[in-house]
Length: 336
Length: 268
Image (tube, rainbow over all chains, first blue to last red; front, side, top):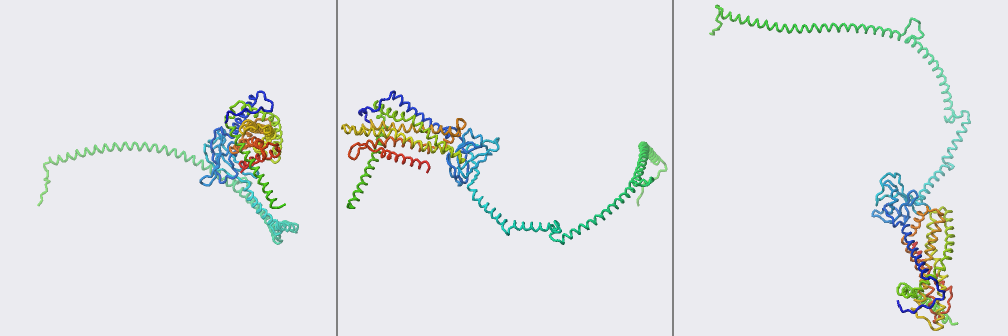
């Protein structure tokens, strides 16, 4: 302002040695503090590291605030940078994921947004298959929402239904009381003369019928036993007849007869085979005869040719004789 | 007594006190603006004597307070950190302890008690000295000119108070952050990434801006309000001794107003 200001009055406090140095030290401390704090805050907010963008789409972004973390396995790997309302009415949560942490996000990753009873909303990422391709920059994913507070009214309504049902079951005229009454009646019947049968059949007459049925079944079983015994003897007879077991020494049974017959058939077949061999030899001879006959037939053709030539010569000779013969007749026919 | 006269007297008294308080606040604002203008103009630091006076004020406002204040601040911080961490653990909410600590301690409490500490230990005694000197000079008939008073007396002291508030707030914030880390994680370095992330989560751009502005305005209030009061003459034009409590109340109301405005900015 005014450089010609009068000098200040001497300070009352004693002068400080090396004042400029000490004051400079304090100023430098202040500068370091300011710069260091600014750098630390910038580093802490991840301003200095390269990031990639992920867009989560949800129908409700309540509880999501700018700056909140997205976690993967409990570690914060991203931070909400912006929240905006899309054209389709869905909330778009824009998340900055540092490039060094982006490897945990894959194309198959799932994102959830949970809101507990206490504390804020949490955004979590789950990657089941880490071998899948990495999530591209600017990818958009729908976030799955789980809201504990919103579940409570539903849970309370369901609980009320369950309790109502339970109350209806346990009422004095309810199903449980009726069942217990039935159990009591069944127990009394169990202690009655027919015991468990009475419980099963419902009345005494049916129980008696059942006992009579059992008796008749016993009689039937006895008869079946005798029948079985008869069947045994029948089977023994059949064995004797068929296999000759237990029969007299001369009786071979059907099987023995069949075996002898087969042996005879074998002999017959062997004889047939020798006869056929003889027939084969005869056939070979017949083939030779046929060959000779074929040759004779060709000779006969030649002979016939010769005979025909001789006959033609005889014919021409007779014609010549006829022409030369003086008693040749006039062969001309005269028409009237 | 005539009721009309009594009412007139009461109204007159109220009017005078209202006018006096309006004058006082206007004077405070005016002196504050003048000090700011002087502080921002390079000519104020051109003369070596002025530079010496400013440096001397910076040193006297900061260095004597620094060790004891840091010890006191560390103790208070430690107690608060222990209370918050133990409470959070007992409720199973330990994940929120860091954020609560950074928000309450660093963002709200430390600037407030730094401002009060500097006001009580440096700014208000300094203002009393200025007023005493002015009264002495008035008796001797050598009252300095307004601009001379501002440049030679008020500006160095105001700059000293401002610098002291800013430096002490910064240092005690760092001490509180370090103590919070040590209390929560111990001497292990492995909690540092998570801790840094939590601190970064709290210091969003808006919160950082409000924190910075609040600290600057606290320092300005501590620097200006006591000095402006000291440099204001009484109704009869004299510089008689004033009550410390009334000066402190005025300063405290300004600081409280700034705090409320910052809270509204941060949380609404």
